[in-house]
Image (cartoon, rainbow, N blue to C red; front, side):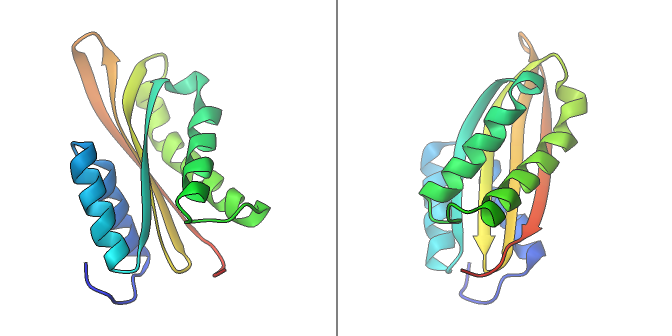
Length: 142
């Protein structure tokens, strides 16, 4: 990615691309390219019964974004991450009810634009389905 101003659509594209990386190595390489372009990004693995662990997914998103420097610990920025993560969870919840899943939550921020993407495989035994959810929020510049 080049060094230019990224709008909400660019950030959404980047977060989806990060969420669907197939290995830790490719994830780290893509994050490095985003950082080089002036865009902050982080991804973290998630798994389990989605309907009973929504709060855990949201907490992991908040903690990961703080640790990676995408957001600071304050209610406005925590609320933005929580809201975007909740929106992403809501988009996958209907397919995930009562099933276990494993995948990744990715967060990308450029300026005021912040997007969260959840990409998961859900199902029983080897009968898996794939789901993706995306949320976006605007956050004030630091």
